[in-house]
Length: 368
Image 1 (tube, helix red, strand yellow):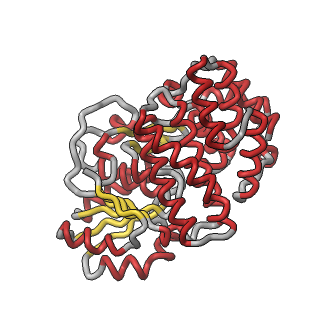
Image 2 (cartoon, rainbow, N blue to C red):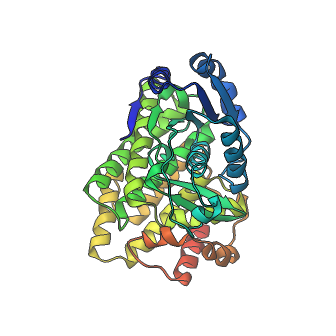
Image 3 (cartoon, rainbow, N blue to C red):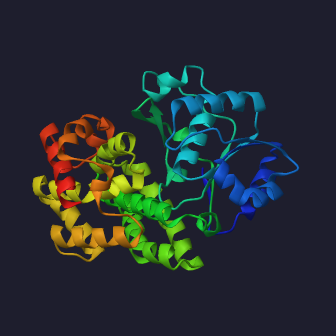
C-alpha cells in the first residue's frame, strides 16, 4: 500500500525515515537539484549516514543504472530517496528494483525474463517537477544505447510519495512548461487509451481541468495555490497512465528526443494534435465520442479550435511552436516512425500502419 503526502511540506520525510528506523539513506538526485535543497534535506537526513548518487544523465541510461546498482550494493541502504524529476525517479526505481534481482538487469529490462523478486528496501519519491507522474507509476523508462525500454512491475511503484509545491517552485519556466504539457498529454492519451476505465477516466479528466486552470499562471504568475494545483495534477496524471499506459503520441516522441534533442514534454506537445486528428478521422463512433469528451473539457468544438487552443497554451507556457528550429523535416518521417514503442502503439484506440504514422509526422511538420 502506497502512502502519499500531497502539499504537506517536506516534514513528512523526517517522520517517515524515523518510522522506518532507517540509518543509511541512499539519495538519488542530480547535483543541481541537490544544491537547491541541500540544506533542507541534510537537516532531515543527518545525523544518519547517507550516500548521494548523482552520476546519471537526462533520460535514464542503462549504463547509469548499472553504476547506481554498484554504489547501492556497496552502501547497503535502509531506504532510498529519489529527489528530482522523471529521470531521477525512474533511475531510483530501476536501481532499487534491479539491485535485488537474481537475473541480469538487461534481461529484465528487455523482457527476456520475468523472474522478479520484491525489494526489501522502501523507496520514497519526492518529485521536483510537476508533470511526469513517475511517482505514481509501476514502470521505469530505461535507454539501452538509443533504444527505449519500459521496465514494468508493480514493485517499481514508490512506497511513499512526498509531493509538495515547495519542491517545484525552483523550476525554470521552460521546464515547467515541458512537464506541465507532459502531464496534460498523458491525461489526454489516457482518456482515449484502450485500457481506459472509470477510475482512470476520473483521474485524467481532473488532471486536464487542473492543468488548464493553473499551468499558465503557475509559470507566469506563480503562487502557492496554482503550484499546489499542479502538484495534484501531476499526481493524477501518473495515476491515470499507471492504469492505461500512454499511446501513439508518446510512442513517436522518443525518437524526437533521442535523434533531434527535443525535450520529452516538448516532443509530446508537438505530436498530440496530429495524433488526435488522425485518431478522430480513423476512429469509430466510440473513439470519436471520447475525443468529443476531450473537446468538451478543453471547451473547444473542433480539431481546428483544439489546435488553436493547444498552440496558445504552448506559447504561454514558454514552449515554442516552431518545429523548424529542431531541423525536423518530412524526410525524417521514416526514421521517426521506425522507432515507435510497440507497447505504446498497442494501447492506442485505433491501429495505424507505418504509412499512417508517417502521415502523422508529416502533419506535425506542416502545422508546427
